[in-house]
Image (cartoon, rainbow, N blue to C red; front, side):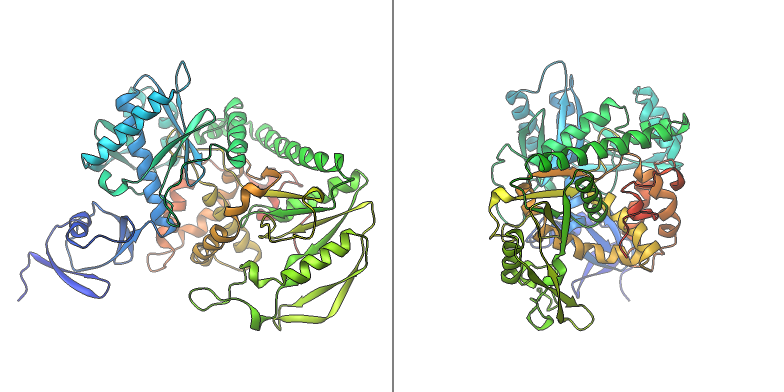
Length: 552
């Protein structure tokens, strides 16, 4: 008979005997080092932190930073490490953790004077000290009433209000060195697991950078166009005092929803008008506009609204569907799993596409292809097209920022636009809401209502979507001439009542369960806004229904 104090652990089809009550961290330290840093594990299919104690036979699958979920845990743990170091060496300043940027997180250390290079160096040295000391990160779960009292004691009344709105019965606090703080999501159990980082000054703050799996962490160039846009949006929402969920909730309670929606929509309209007018001011040179962005950015609505802007200013837009230039199925490249990779740029007939663009913008008649998606081949039929001097060609597609697209068109004659939902509202000072999560919530809502796809199915496909974005979109975003932020500061409050009930239906037997619970843990802080209050022409209508620009 097996000793009752011994439990059997299965890891990658190998079985090991460990003593009852061992933690994941202790098991990990007995094994050979992994290729990438391990930050958590699935235990019998459930996501668990490395501090999790095992008391029964279990199957373990490690989570490292080669997975999106692993990188998210790594970055979140880095943020807590940063906060602890900041509290230790810069106690007279206030840390604000803002948003994802440049394979990391943009942060600000606010005080009477700007942060100096010496202070940033002190901060970095202290983080290294905590790592060298193998400082533990301990999770403490306390009742919400005690947490609210703790927040009020620290004069952090917004955090107490946020906790009240969430309806949570307990809250997870994390203790690291002298710092005790509530952090969203899962964290590592020791600073030794997050040893790779870099602090790089940027504008009025700095970037906490995470490891790059593709290559060693190179020095930051100091320039990021998309980062500048995000910081500009940050300053604007802070001036409106709606940069945190608690501030949005307070405005909802005060009956200011209409004002918030109107301000958010006007901010977005001004962005579009600026881009459109800049292009029109140089219309004598501009013949081609390329639009790209990740999934659920609102490309359909943006493209249509930009076309409307051109029309009312006397410029007639012409559109081409990039998907019609797919190569025949038999020539489609495959991914590492042997599946067709339709998102690869090599899935397009670049030579034909480039040739057609060249002749079109030079006023010639072109027979553009029509792709038969049912048969997986190019149709024998074509579409005859021609442009005159008063027209402009608009093309939307994931490869629009790639320099291999439209190579025959001189740079002076084309404009590239990158759009994404660059989320500006944060849960609190230390817990940003990622743009990726915002887009996932949008996509789940749209897929559920209009594509007969359940939230669980959308979540299961999301990792593949993200992989395609990392390969085909994000590396080229800095090639854009214009950047457009489609996020609306109120939108998650609108999406919450539409998607939350369906996420709650996802059970423990479903592979999407862990991710569904994580998304629910974000949405629970928001007070709802009725979808009927959203303006008819809003970009958000693309995801909740009623858009005048909806795809057929």
